Image 1 (cartoon, one colour):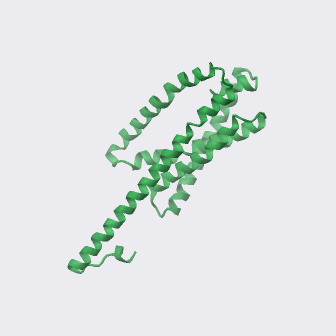
Image 2 (cartoon, one colour):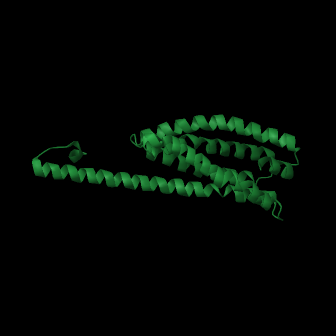
Image 3 (spheres, helix red, strand yellow):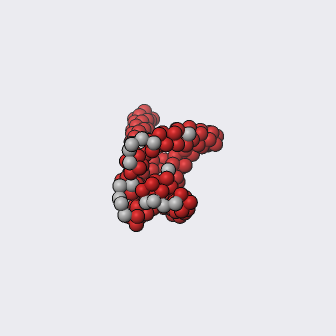
Amino acid sequence: WGPSFLQRVYHMRLQDADLVFGGLAVVTGLAGTMLGGVALDLTTRLMGGDVMSAALLSATVLCFMCWPLTLLAFWVEDWSWFLLLMGVGQILAFATLTPVNGVLLWAVPPAARSISIALAVVGMHLIGDVPSPIVVGALFETSLSPNIVMVLVMTWIGWAVFFWGLAFCLTRRRLFIQTQYAVAQARHKYWVDGTDSPLLHS
């Protein structure tokens, strides 16, 4: 719906709008994918090697940074500001691909990784690609301005921020519980048979 927005608001020809938005997607997609890998590596180091938590945190932060930029892009009237905000917002959105794919792979046993990716792709199409043209098209046919319609579409990113953040909190909580259980087991073994463990000194 980006090209339709450009056509209605900036009075561009649809062919030109398709070319602009398609070119923007290609450039930002390449830049965002590289940024996502770098962000995941840095976050993993900061999280002490906990790749799952790092991936979830990266996805949450990148979505959170992307959200206001894409919202503002559809409010501004200046074409240059639209390109800048949308370009940076799309880079951040594409950057989530690396940590998200990592989560889909690392959240399941190795034998189930293929089905994990497959189910995720099917789910994305069922929830996103299939109903969105119908819903957004219906909104465009109402009396709402194109700016408001696209801002409503962009608010959907808020759900991604919420659920990735929730997943990160639940993952950290589970890791904390597992660590406490391992420490308790080590203490029990120490008191029962005198076996020392590095966990008792961490």
